[in-house]
Figure 1 (cartoon, rainbow, N blue to C red):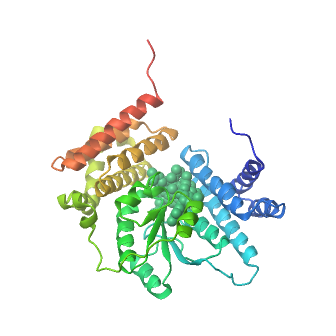
Figure 2: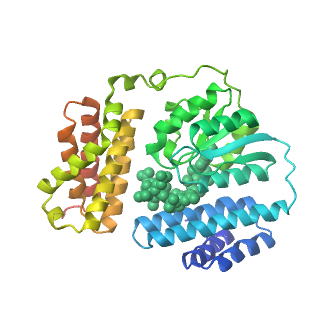
Figure 3: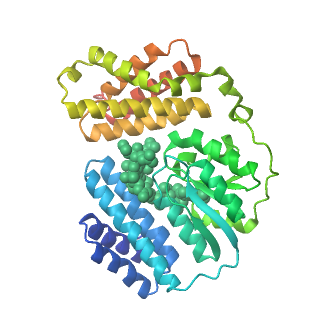
Length: 360
Ligand code: B12
């Protein structure tokens, strides 16, 4: 078993202060650790990052509220900024390694992971233009023209932004800037970074540093590829059809669900609204699975959703009923039908694992 370390104690103290919303105490925990010799990089990657990850675990298990999730994130963001300002001491940094742009694709709100990567690169002497959350691709490209960086680092947390990430990757490469991607949206092994033809992927900030140290060759500037050039399966138009008709699909699935899932008839307005959001996410993940042609993207999302709903005592059969309703509308689309069938099977296996029947 892993031994508890001094860093674990800092993690625990920071977690307690942050979840109680006590920002001064939380900041003191981190700054005191820095004063006693814990390196800043360790604080960023082995204290602040795990505390953020714990926010996700505790929220998913329904042990903290959405407001607490937001509050802890806001406190951690300010602590990261305070470390950066303290490091700079009011002086401009003197970078020696080169210049990079770090940001998130349009629609992506998870800026914190990108910020950690940006800070670690700054610590190692890179000049970093940190663009934060959701940068629209034309503005990202305009920034690249102006700053001419050695690379652009794109962070993604939510897989449904992968089609947008693909367009951003292609656009950056078209102006001759190599793209290094990372974040949970690209899959645990970076498989979707390869699907979308990113120049490289790295699992974390230290991996990003290693890739940049090796050097990334500049792609030859080109007129830009079409999505279908990289992903020939898009020629069947299934992704386009599901993505374009997503509002109608959600509406119809909700209506069918009322028939198929009797408990829904007595749902409150709030419960209905949540169900509509869940269905919108299901349709979004289905479309993305069609985009990258990987049913596993859909099954991973469904089993995660089943756990989140389970923690709130919403039965998995509501999800199964939702899938059946969706399948009924997409019968003429073989890839979508296959992905939904795989989703249903994954949910059944997941339920059997979570609630095994009595042993004979
Ligand atoms: C905080 C948070 C938010 C905040 C983000 C605020 C901010 N300023 O960042 C807010 C409240 C806005 C938010 C919103 C949402 N969120 Co959220 N969020 C999180 C949470 C709890 C923490 C994210 C984080 O900072 N993690 C810590 C970092 C350090 O870890 P990391 O992401 O793995 O990053 C490391 C590596 O991946 C890598 N890396 C990351 N980027 C890059 C880039 C490069 C180039 C490289 C090389 C490496 C690299 O290096 C990092 C450091 O080592 C996660 C849970 C989690 N476990 O992460 C959920 C999570 C990502 N969110 C989730 C969801 C569903 C949402 C919402 C859809 C919720 C909703 N219903 O509205 C929205 C979507 C918003 C949007 N459009 O983007 C789900 C995603 C589930 C899924 N199946 O995809 C998660 C997993 C929730 C959970 N509880 O488990 N969220």
